[in-house]
Length: 440
Ligand SMILES: Nc1nc2c(c(=O)[nH]1)N[C@H]1C(S)=C(S)[C@@H](COP(=O)(O)OP(=O)(O)OC[C@H]3O[C@@H](n4cnc5c(N)ncnc54)[C@H](O)[C@@H]3O)O[C@H]1N2
Ligand code: MOO
Ligand SMILES: [Mg+2]
Image (cartoon, rainbow, N blue to C red; front, side, top):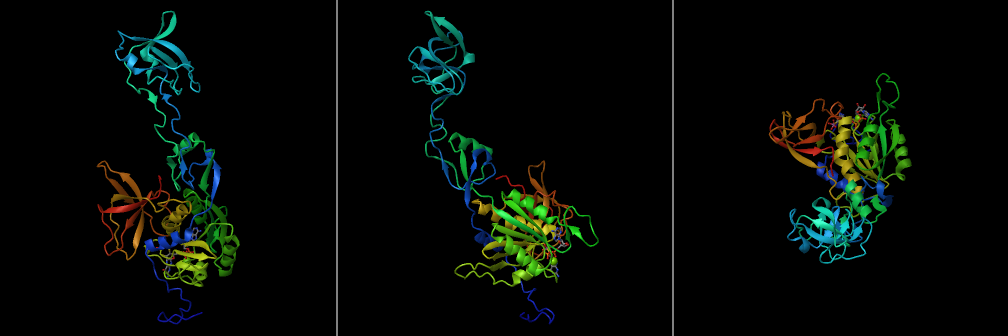
């Protein structure tokens, strides 16, 4: 092992030789390494929450025919120009059209067709008068309708192509499909929908102190809570966690477990073991890699992307490519693990599914209390958002927000971004808040 100079003779393994990158640079490197996953077809009824992998267009005009918006009579508006309750227009009824049916007769001057909501408006008619403004009658021995209100041309008729023209775009690649999209795609006959596959993400919790969740506590040990948290976060990003359990703080065990799962997943997330402790084995594994270089012409299959990020919590968060697979090594501290996921893993997972704007959504809010101390690193403070009666959104910083703490994680709906600097932020300051509950 190469000796490090200037740190005392017991520091022989370079574990302190870590250069911090800015959050934006870390995000850029991870996104560049993430790529996109392959696509697949899913049944229409299962497309909600998936991301479309290619543009879909209207396969016909929509509506495909002039459509009655109400139950009533299809008329020529001109025939009703003078109609009123006291002076109704009397029109001979030439046909009755159910939704799904077609009129056999056209509506000519002096005639009308009874139509149901959703029926094709017969040729010749240009308006529909609602049934409530009509009465049935007999005129000259034939069925007639009394029209008691003047109709405007086009009234209660949805013209062909009003919403979509054949070939016009319906949904763009990367769009997160909603129930509304399902309706549109069904309308245009897309029984199977091309979507990005759900990225498969291996999750390892490293730490010899970790017990399975179902185990009773033992002295000095804790249950692995990161695996379940990260799995839930992965699902929120539309990806599929592959839970790989816990690993001891041993380099060989880590190396072997990661290599074994690598081919079966699109990304690997580990938690723990990334700091400078004697048993921080992920850090040791990553130290063996060549470092990222912006000037290298092509990425090497295995390289360290970064092993320190200028942020709190989560400064030891690391990322690498191992045999071409993106590995995000999050901190073991639950708060830092959560923040590292939101800032680095979540955008990568969204980008892998074609999301054109994968960064966290942010709003501007007013801090409701001081974030006392300054920091050389940008800080992400768990906060609860609140709508003040004054129309302003407030960010209430939550108690128990330290990196090692969990109590505020469940409650937080945003991360208030406190810029680096000597001051911290004060009550009333306007800050950016990254939203944890995405709406699009
Ligand atoms: N001398 C220094 N010590 C530390 C530094 C430093 O710069 N110098 N950095 C601190 C910071 S900041 C962080 S963050 C942590 C990062 O620690 P690791 O990522 O190495 O994580 P571990 O050491 O494995 O564990 C930390 C903590 O989290 C608990 N943990 C771990 N895994 C889980 C899990 N799956 N579920 C629940 N809790 C977990 C673990 O028991 C520890 O308490 O390092 C600081 N130290
Ligand atoms: O960077 Mo660590 O995550 O503060 O505690
Ligand atoms: Mg550690």
